[in-house]
Length: 293
Image (cartoon, rainbow, N blue to C red; front, side, top):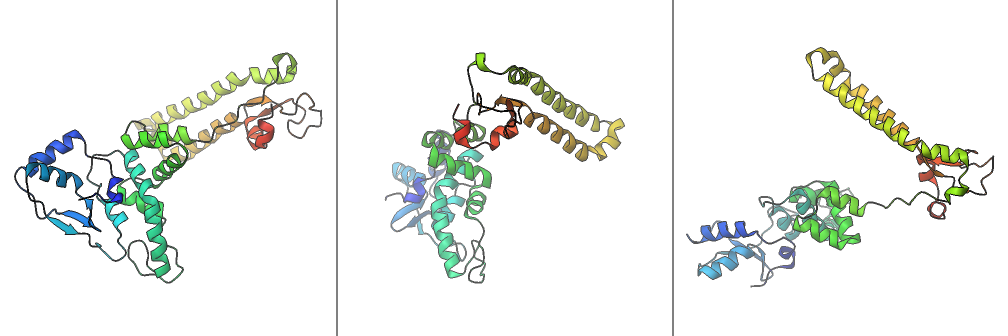
């Protein structure tokens, strides 16, 4: 029997999982856990079907039946991995692959006036987001599903590595993150002295940011001690202030020579005559200007 396309989205069992399943099926097929079929294809239980055939064990089949009003085959397949030994990243890739089917099902239900979980609603009411539905069904979180969907669209190699469990979510985020344009550069010999002085101070700014973050960690450690009981009561406010201080210094750090150099004038609205710009100003510049140097 062929495997349903939806079931093919789920990664195969590992060698250890196959071994445990085979050991279990040697004692016979559990009729309470039938192989689920849809349209003459296996929707769930393809490994049990393969092993049963190999062992000469007669399996039990059952057609797919919605668990509740509004349930769909895509939702069923998503829930079928809940007990699998998969990482949150792998689950996110499965949710991303099932997402088009879940979105299509959601659109049909919305048109019919039924919400994602089968709760009847008025026509035009907003149903839960499909990404949230897919994330919950597969046992991961919505942000991970969004990253996986982006990787699937923009970096297929990264997506396949995520699905195989060889790339972490942190690595995947870096792979699909928007690439920051390189700071504008001009020959060092033509960099104005005031701009060079600012650029030379970049390490000092970074050191200041690190110092504030180190102070934050030190204060947090003190808040966990007995003498720091009052500090603990004020920790949230202190943490916010220190975080903001570090971010303000970070984004005030000199970033690059003014992109309008060497034609930058005293009344330049971009650098205000300083010949250099900080991170905030640079990020606000049109991409065409940032990449022009």
